[in-house]
Length: 257
Image (cartoon, rainbow, N blue to C red; front, side, top):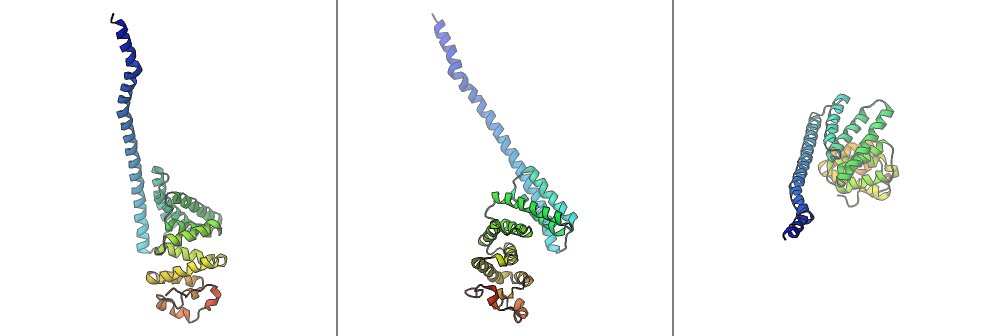
């Protein structure tokens, strides 16, 4: 008499309770696996970041000592950044650092084809880093620099210049690169782009006049600094022999004091 009931209960176990219990058992296992994966990823991020920090400390020492570095030193630091990418392949800081080392190797290389290869590698790394940090003025500035070295004064080059200036108007290093690249491509700049370069010179006179003036002087564009507040001392002697401002085809002094 009880057999049908027993069979129904037994069948019901497999039809409903069984899967439910299986899911209940699987839940903690899946959670444990996910936690392990998160911990592993966090560990990789931590190691990748630590290696980048070690590389940056060495670069900071270069800057503080102002001692020119040879290819061996540059390759050693580039190795740090490459090791960092071995843990996190899209670490933007590692990509940015590696790009900087590629540009350094380009400047040190005595072989034209090798120098071009380094500039192309830098361009690739910077593009990848910008996918992660599209608001970094330094990445845009260095991308413009890499493309300048490759003589790629195209739409991407001018876009990089614009973003470098708009995103970091008071960042000295990005503005130095922006001005350098702008002056290198001066003949290809439109009036608005020349005005942007002139405005960056005006801003640079507040805290970065000497370095900005050195860039202007290297291109002989003294009309960009003559008469501007902040450049009186550093540019005074040069401005007595400056080329007339009309050569620049841009109202450089208007509204920039």
